[in-house]
Length: 369
Image 1 (cartoon, rainbow, N blue to C red):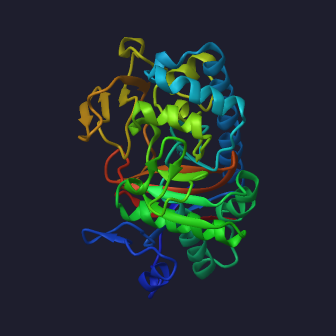
Image 2 (image 1 turned 60 degrees about the vertical axis):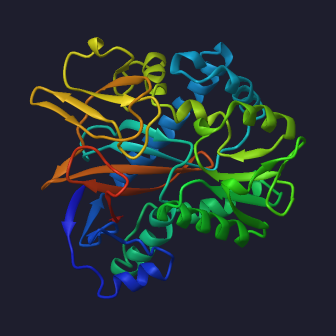
């Protein structure tokens, strides 16, 4: 694994905009950065792929464990959500997307930092944009990126109904993902309709959109935990299908990392994690059960405490042994390893000037071979 400095394509802005990435620059800083790239050996890619498959298998075992023992309370999932999670799991509702955040330096085994299981962002950048780059810059090399092809194969197995796609916050990466996922669904012949969350209404029997059309299948880009208690009852009544399925609430809660360590202690892809920081003797990271985009993270080390602010600081926390991201000349790099329909599908590297990755952190492409 190496970080290489390269020359960006002369027309790179036009090239990425042609595929829908209009927010490639944020506050005059690159969000999509192709002045650098990462090179991997084929063996390193195979290790990442195998580790992703292994971690996903462990996660599914954990979901089954939690559901059968009703251990939702351990990670503060409200009781009104339990029955829907159980029904979703027992019905074997299929996932579509997920992204593991891995710390990997090309030497030690990849370590799971967290799982973006419910609303993983940045599909477009990871899939089409990165693929365009490697075809333009390294046409004779390879890239671990079969996200688009796997999405094309996954959609028909998940739904034959018309798909409503909805979002809550008008963030550029959210809107681009909604558009991209809708485009893929249309490519396989599915009918789609994009609606804002406020356009969804409950009529006493079913969910309908602003045109009074029944919503049977909903692809959402807002998290399960923001939903009111009555929504869970209504989903059960209407039998509305959702992506991601309700059982993903377990894996999107960072408290699951503690349960995972309890179930699989000393696994080479996992880090020690506890509900009590006293169990950790050396550097550790404090994370909220529910949190996103690097908000409200604190790293406790012998050098002091590094913390980020955010909107998730009022809930419960878990504590994970610190496993620092590899630092390439001041660029802390995390690997986002994508799962499509539960299968490894590709990676993207994000860089930050600090050890905590944020929503605006730089995307850097990769190749191998």
